[in-house]
Amino acid sequence: MKKGLLIVWIICSVIWTPLQMATAQGGDNPPPPVAPPPDTNLPLTELIFDADFNDTDFWFNGESDTETATFGLTDNGYQISSTSAENGLSFVPPLNVQIDNFYVEIGFTINDCAIPESALLFFTRLGVSTQNALNSMVYVVQCNGSYRARPMIDSNIGPILTNGTTIALEEGNTYTMGLLMSEKNAVWYLNQTVVAEFETSNDVLARGFITPGVQAGLTYTLTSWRMWSLKNTTAEAVAMGASTEADNPTPIASDNPLAAGAIGIVLYRPTTDNPSMLPLGRANAAAAYIVGDSFNIYNSTPSAILPFTGFEGEDYYLETVFRIRGCEDTSSAGLVWRANTDYSSYYAFQITCDGNYRATLMQDGTATELVSGTITPSLQDTTGNLTVSVYVKGSTAWLYFQTNLLTSFEDDTLVQGHAGLILESGVNGEKMDILANSIVVTETR
Image (cartoon, rainbow, N blue to C red; front, top):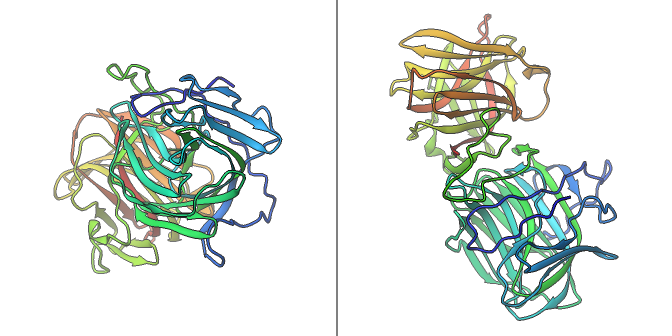
């Protein structure tokens, strides 16, 4: 494995080789998380990563490029060391997966605290923003027990979102820390206590990489590292990279921008805690109402669009994650973009329950098909969450299903506008009925 580039706050862009995440090794019944208080009901779906410290090919061993940190396997786990109390932050080359919603848990032993402010860090939703700089949600806990969480915005320190004092990290002791992130909500656990519950910043990326870090002379040894998906999780196995010249960013390859990690900050994300961003109501053409922590949406007319209230733009990435509650073969669900105010003109990407997809240009009631194809397995033969997304930049649109690129097309008829969900009945009149776990719009890069 190539050496990863470890950074300090002032670096504006990076490239590294990520750790190649393998299948979790927890078996059919892996041990449950231990960081939360007993009897905590976490919304976990599947164990997707379980670190193996006997796999010498997996882990990066050596010194950071900045010569401020060292990393290496030991008999007890994986040691991470900041070589001086004067050093800024460094992090391990991250897992090769971009993920939005998850629960991650690490076990660690404190080897040495150079000063009371020596700190363990954990980076989530780490990625490159539209300015070709680093964005992340960073959790920090110091040896003296002080903690804080704050975003990194374009390689600059963002405002503190939560801070306080928890248990001190003492040399020779072992701890377990857990982080639950679902949409904008975060819960932070340490040794069976809740450190903090808070909302993350709108500047944080919709999804990104995950990795532990270190600062100011701390040495600790990872003894475990596990990660679980949630029911609203979407993830993409990708390698992260960007230009090393911040003033001359490398253009994203046009063949698959999503796989290149070319999504920026969140522009729009309705949640059940903030439902005003969607026009709710069962009497609407696109009926929508809250069910638990999801939105139940169906069309009460043959074709209906649920507008993304207040959103308008030119280039953006649209994504929805949903489960099917009811449909027939030719019922369809999808996304619209660059729509005019009354949604009489727009682009649409729809997938039918029997596995056909199409992209159309609608102009004042007249539809022109731009591309079409099939997916396997079909929606009605797929269990669990379904992810439909569109990446729009300039005159090109890339169409994705389950974060896999289906095709792309070029058309410059519409250049900007509104967005939304589209649902259509099948030939026999069966409505499209879905349960949306996630709706998000981000910047493109």
